Amino acid sequence: MVLLRHLLGDALRRLRLRQGRTLREVSAAARVSLGYLSEVERGQKEASSELLASICGALGAPLSQVLREVSDNFALAELQSEPVFTGVAEAETAEPKVVPAGTARFVPPPDQPEFEQVSRRISDIQDMVPV
Image (cartoon, helix red, strand yellow):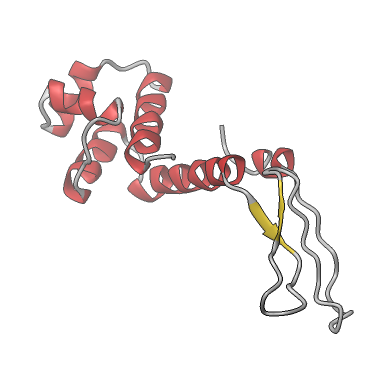
């Protein structure tokens, strides 16, 4: 299971390292203790929205940008770790088909031919995630 705090910590750490800044510099600018910032980056602490805003402010990045990156990575992680259900059950007792993650295909209902079949692979989605 993917935890939001791990992805959030990873995003904050990547942002800090891209800037070539130390934990000490960012913790002082954000007015957060060095130890607590370290725990947030390692995904050991759940940061409040106020704390996240302060850290992002110290890093000079909008909170929305960080949350967008986390959201994209969370969606990708979900696709990689969860089975995907496809198809439409013909009867209420029919079981949905399970396909391996990363090979999901949309199968339109047979009575609605106007739907276009769409096929997505994890590689298609990875290209959408900013690195």
